[in-house]
Every structure is written in C-alpha cells, then in structure tokens.
Image (cartoon, rainbow, N blue to C red):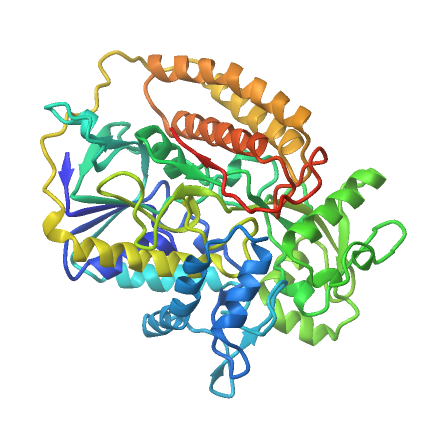
Length: 525
C-alpha cells in the first residue's frame, strides 16, 4: 500500500495540471496506464480556444460554445471556462509551450463553429507540445511522483475499509502494476479522476488505445451519477488507411480552405447539407460524410486542399504533410481519403464547478466528465481548455478544504486468493472486437431504436460472461479494459434509448425532431 495526500488517475492535460497546482501544498501521486504520454492530450492537433484577439469577446466564445452544444450546455460552466481561458494560456507560456507567433502576437487560427480566430496552436501538434511542457514541470517538482504502467481497477471506498463503512467516501484506487502483475492499493485524502474518454468502445476512433472509459466505469461502480453518455462526438475526417489506424486530419484543413468531395464524381457536397458548407459544426459534417459513404457504398470521401498554394499547405500542416508523404499521398497535389471516426466523449461523470463528483473525496476533470461545458456537441479546441480549467479548479478546492479532508483509514489489501491465471485470453479478444463492431454499426453516427435495442441485447449477454470471467481469473490490463468498455457501452446505449429526440450528436431516425426543452440524460447507479 502506498499513501500520498492526493491520488490522480491519468497523466494528460487535466491530471498534470491538477498535480502541478497541488504540488506546493501536498504530496501527489500520478498514475498512468502504460506510458506517461499515452493519453489523448499528446494527440491533439488543433489547439486551444481562448479570447485573445482585439475584435473577439468572452460573450462571442460563450455564444459559439452554446450554439454548438445545441442548448444542452450549462451556461455558468461555459462562462467559467471561457473566462479562465486566457489565464490557462498564460500558465502554459510560463511552462514553456512555444505557441506559434506572428509579429510578437500569438498566431490565432479559426475552426468550425468559431465566429473569430481564437485558436492558439503549436503548428499542427499542439497537444504534444503541451504534454511535454506539463511533464517537464511535473517531473521537476519534488512533491509529484509519476508512476507509469498502472492499470486502475476500482476506486477504494468506505466498503474497502478494514472496518466496513457505507459512507461512499473515496480513499484512492486499486491498481494493477503491469510489470509485476501485482495489485496495489494507493490511498490518499482526495482522488482526482483524469482518465480520459471512452472512444475505444467504437471500431473507428481517433482516441489512443487506452481510451477505454476506465474512470467513468469506476466512478459509476462506486456510486457516481453519469450524464449525457449518448453524446459521442465523431470527427468528420480521419485518414482512411488500412495500415495506419486513427490518424486525424485536423479541422483546420477545412478552416484553411479544404473541400469535401465525392471520390467518384468529384462533386463538392457540403453546400447540399448546410449553408456553412465545410465550416459547419462537426456533427453536421460527420453525418454528411457518413451519408455519402452509406448512400454510394463508398469506403471513404475526399478532402481536397490541393487548389491552395503548395508552400502554404506544407507550411501550415507540416506534420500531416510529412506523414501523408510517407503513405504516398501528396496533399498539395491530390485529395486525402477520409472517414468519420469516434473522436470525443462529451458525456461522463457529473461534476460541479469545483470538479467535485457525487462522492466525498472524489474529483474529476477533463474528458471523463460532464461539466456542462460541451452540451450536446463539443466546440473545436474547447477540450484541452476544459482540462486546464477543471484540473486547476479541483486542485484549488482540495487545498481550500484540506482541513476537512480526513486522513485515510486502514484499507483492506486487494484479495487475489480465489482466482487463477487465465488460459483463455481469446475470450477477451473476441468480446473486445464484438463490442467495437456492434457499437459502430448500431450506436454510431445515425441511430434507430431497433439498432439500439439490438446493441442492448448483446451487452446483456456479454455482461454475464465478462463478470464470470472477472470473478475467476487474475486481472490483466486487457480484462480491466474489457470490463470498463462493456460498462461504458451499456451507459451509452441506455442514455441513447432514453433520449427521445435528435439533438446535437445524438441523431435518431425514429425521433428526428428537437424537443422544446433541453434536458440532460442523467443516469443514477
């Protein structure tokens, strides 16, 4: 058992921001599944949205976020995040993030859904620069311990105290050390879940391999409410290539003039769907791409920016340009084959403006949460922003309440006395593949009640199988992830069946209309 002041699950933007904000006051342990850079932060190409331009206002950014969110956002959350954005950018500059500049001012790009140029970026690899700066700062602080290779299994609550308590208080996590195969209890006065989204529930996803909804599933099992899990964002343009999985073609390519075309006829089709054409919000563009692919039996559609000056294209998108060249595609001369793919989990663990969940001692920040910022559809480049603002908010609240947070009681160690090593890894692989396929086909970009019920039926059958397997065999990362994936799939389908309208990212052919009142889908354990 290891004891710290605060346990943080996840080493991306939200987790490291919280750790850095806490470190002058207390001892912090950051647990990462796999590598410290394995989360979504490092993959973020676009940038961070903040009001920094003379002609732009907080009100504009708030309005853009609310419009994209289709009325489901909580206005106070949107105001809180937008107003804290410039401060978040300042902190990152202090940590050494080399944002692109133009004549001493920060260079701002514009993305779909934004009314102004307000995206600060580092070329087209902002996330990597942010991740590197945060890690460097965290590694330099003596009060922060970074522990990679830890697959978290479950939250430690009052039920795991040596003297049983039904308080629901969270005291840390049980985590599998992937190297030794042993499970350790990591305990602290407060715990922050910053574990990312659940994108890997789907067959096509831009999310990293580890995005299996671990934090959402653990919080749900411990007794937290989750909200709006049906709101899964699909990115309209993921590279279609059988060798290269989940390579994203940033929204900024469309922002700088890229056009979507039918690969056979060459017809530019976005104006047929929306007057904003290629700059319409993501959900509209993703549905249009999905419609073109399904209607014509295509494997992909074309994204074409070859009509622009070659130096401009290569200069604006150096990483994408280089990567595509290695695959035999010259984006300055030819179109890029793209497909929609799952991109962002807009729903998650319900939190307040301090990052607090329903359970005492448990906080959450970033993609694993539903803070009220994104509503029914996330506006481009608001995601990293949410991580910084809520990572810091959670840290501030923990410091402010420090005297009320009691030291952890005696906790029972993990019991592995009744399990054996599995000789049936194939069961995990089979179930994993099956979940991702039926979720893509039945709970994807366009839904129907019948498809959702089919998915639910399969989830019920698999749940018994996976629970039985989990009860008999020693835990492995694959088994932990499968259990969490299935739990998240269940929450997504239940939420989708519950919403009898089409709003934002939830689009169902059975209820195409919008209801008069926007309501969150809140599930109670």
